[in-house]
Length: 153
Length: 153
DNA sequence: CTTTTTTAGTTTAGCTACTATACTATAATG
DNA sequence: CATTATAGTATAGTAGCTAAACTAAAAAAG
Image 1 (cartoon, rainbow over the protein chains, first blue to last red):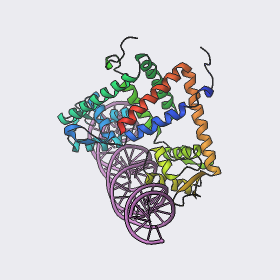
Image 2 (cartoon, each protein chain N blue to C red):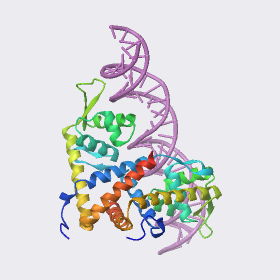
Image 3 (cartoon, rainbow over the protein chains, first blue to last red):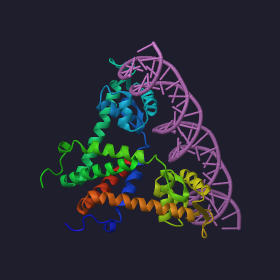
Image 4 (cartoon, chains in turn brown, yellow, blue, cyan):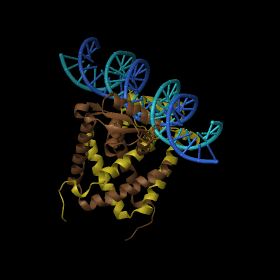
């Protein structure tokens, strides 16, 4: 009840806490991992596989928006994934400029292994945090993401 | 009280929420920004300035550990910052292999502008979240970071 | 003391993951 | 149609890393 709408006198550490998080996230985001038959994939590669798996038939441009990178970046990533036989490009039936993306069998396997790891990660978090805390956490991350999004504009 | 130590049936979205966060953080981490007299600095550059500012006289190796990168990476970054006249290398008095890092006047200005921005960011968060929520958030980020750290090993 | 090993930092080649820019091809609009 | 917008690609260049080989000084072992 008290101490709302104040400046950060009472929270000198949150900035540092977030700093550590960023360091760990960056570290994670540069370590490739193995995904079964698909072999070793970089974080960017598996993120791309994940986005295609969640939105089957997604187009190049939509994928670029989802990942918040340029279309050029997506072209490069998808080409690499195609070479690895994880993703297939097919022409869009209604717009012959556009391309639809789908996962191959191998791609789906990688997708599933990745989802499974998310699951395990979540469960580890749930072991250490109560459902109430998780709920607050989710709200906070959401707010944080929005402030960040605004900041990134 | 209920539903503790369960799997994630009740939280199908947290994974997606965190995914969005990661995308925004990565986006932030590749956009250079202006820091007064120091000019435009990349995220890695300002992180390095920040770490030196917080631990004046820090050595190359300690800095590498703090940033969780190799010493080679730190050498490259510090060399660039030295060229930009933000950082100074001086030989360590007790160990002539080692190097102590300090900020120049210009470096300190960049440091302060950066700290100021952290402050503003925190205040924006505090406008939208109660102190109680922030406290939980901090705990959760901490837990999350630790799980991540373990995962990164 | 020397010799050997460890530690602190540097250098370099190579990789990922982007961006910006210029391009081709198709679609939509006047 | 001619023009403009949209979908995707190609390419050159950059940041930010790593791994491995290196130099020099300190510490440990003999």
